[in-house]
Amino acid sequence: MHYQPTLRELFLAFLQIGVSSFGGALPWARRILLEEREWLDDKAFTEMLTISQTLPGPNIVNLASYYGTRHRGALGAGAACLGLLVVPMVIVLALAMIYLKFAHFSQVKGAILGMTAAATAFMYSQAVKLSKPFSQNAIAVALAVATFLIGIVLRWPMPLVLVACGAVSIGLAFKGRV
Amino acid sequence: MKNHDLLLEAAALFFGLSLISVGGTIGLLPELHRFLVEARGAMTSREFANYVAIAQAAPGPNILYMALFGFHIAGLLGAVVCLTAVTLGPVLMTLLACRAEQKFRDHPWREIVLRGLAPVSIGLLATGVWTISSSFPDWKTWALCLIAFVIFLRTKVHPLWLIAIGAGLGAVIL
Image 1 (cartoon, one colour):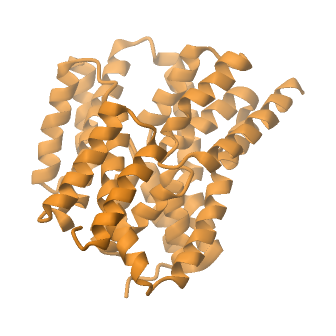
Image 2: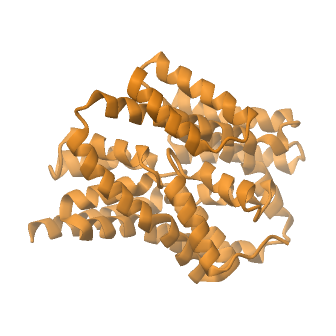
Image 3: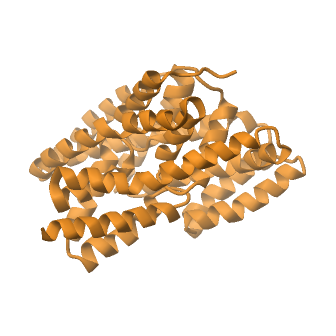
């Protein structure tokens, strides 16, 4: 059975995710919940990620609500979401005020760009690590790559990509190919 | 008071949009731009782009640009109202979905659907990351990203170290 965090632990874990997540929060959730705390395994994380992405709304908020509900009910969802959002909101408001004052310095723009480049690299590496459990299955890898390419080359809207690729993928899973 | 009317209108729109934003909220940006910049003139196009960039560069979920839009309209109250508007609906829906999913815990289709969707959801995650990297202005930024990517795959270095180094390098060479 997976670890059952308390409300306080939920709040603190998602607070850590919130304040560390440069770029996007989902890969940080994987790092902090799975690699650092070892509260769940790759399969459970991928299931949770899938459900969060299938539901409407900000994916990381869905993930926090799902994980919180799963372990501590509605209160757990509240603790996880508050941890995720409150402190980062204060930080982002403060940064916005500072940034608007100093944006005309080219070093500031360069520094932000450099940060973004490293954060983006981290997120790509987490996507690669997430695909490790099925990396031996060529069809599953092809599906992940096809989804990515349809999103970036054909630029279909996300819901359409999800429905189209999801239908093919679930069909293949039903046949035992994925 | 005028700003509070606009705040209410924005909150209602954000709430509605949040319920149809399957796959992530990045796809909502054009709609938000249409409302805040074109229809209501609440901010300039440049301010809008700056807020999105700040939320992306700052730690925290990218959805925090909603708080920045709200702050622009009505200060701290606006930030809280707009962020709540965009998260409340999805949180409630997730709560219900989680309960429903527990009931189907041992149903064979649950396993099939989730196993099937797993590669798709990883592809979608990468697509979301692409929307950020597609704004890289030059090859130097891409080179920095590629080097960091290889380091992340090969080592267990804490990402914040590399991000800090990226900031330092960026200030000098980018």
